[in-house]
Length: 192
Image 1: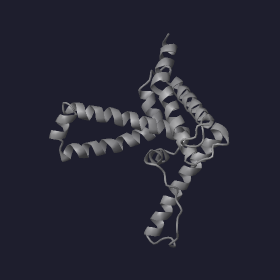
Image 2: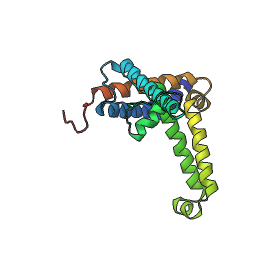
Image 3: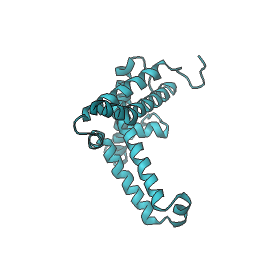
Image 4: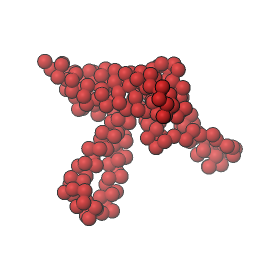
């Protein structure tokens, strides 16, 4: 019975949310024209990886130009929405979707605990201090690192015996989410 319970736990805590994140991020990227999504799940993964790599390359080039180590030139950069930008920081694709979801999950729990520690939202607003805000920022950076290393986070939060189920369920959720995004209408507001 342990395997079935672990699979159901993984499905609800990781598979369905990863699928929803994959669908939302992919559909938004397709509908905004960031990717064309014509290569199926593997093709769109490659497109996300290429976008992420281009974003990193452009950032490095800007730093080199700023330091005077490269000639001044115009760097065309794709402007992403804030959510897409955060996802691209995690690398895009499957790894990026799970890292992004892990980051949002950890941050949500931290924020809820932070507010509860003050006795509620209104009480927090009355008593928040500079030290508390700095602590929240430091925790956010640590959460970013934990999200990048998401396999370790999820192994620590699963049963030792069936930890591999979480990875299979996560990829299945990602795959289904991308497939559904590829089937959805391509334009925002398109009623086809």
